[in-house]
Image 1 (tube, rainbow, N blue to C red):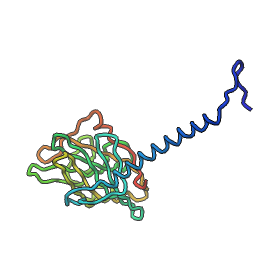
Image 2: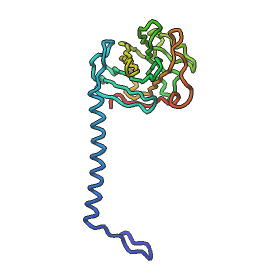
Image 3: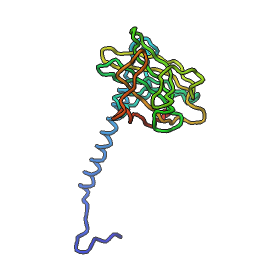
Image 4: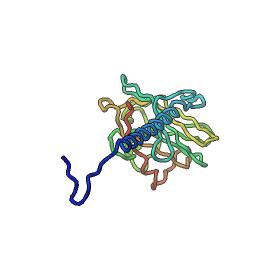
Length: 217
C-alpha cells in the first residue's frame, strides 16, 4: 500500500477524471493513426510521369527523408532480397544533380557508398548511372559492374522541369546475408560542370543526409 507523504492528503481520482484521461489518450492515438494513414495514402497515390523506367509506376512503401526535402519510394521483394527504388529530390532553381545510395559498410557517411546519380547533360539529355563514392572528392564517373559492392540494374531518371524535381530509379540486389536493414545516403548538388556533377555544399543538411532504413518495413 502506498502512503501519502507526511502533511499531505492522499490523492483520489474520480471515475469522471479517469474517463476524461482515457478519452484524451484515445483521441491522441486516433490522431496519430489518422496521420499515418494520410502519409501512407499519399505514398500509394503518387505516380511517376514519363517513360524513363518509372512512368505510371506505384510503390508500396515510401518515406519522406529528414534532409534536403527528398523522398524515397520503394518495393521490397523478400524472396530475392531486392529493392526497386524511386528517389525524388528537388533541385530548386538550378538544374543540378541528385543521388541516392547504400553504404555497405554500415557507416553513416558518404565514403564507401554505392550510389545512383542523375543529372542533365549539356546537350539536354539525362544521364543516370551507378557510381562509387570512394573518397570525399569522388570522380562521380560511371562505375563498372565489378566496382560495385552489389548488383544495380534498371537505372533511369526523370526530370520534372516545371517542379524542378529529379527522380532516380534503380533496382538493387541487397548484399547477401545482410538482411534488409542498411545505412543509406542521399544527396543533391546545384551544378554540373563538363557533364560531371560538381561538389555539393559541405555544411548543413548536405553533410547530414544519411539514415538507417529497413526495406522490409
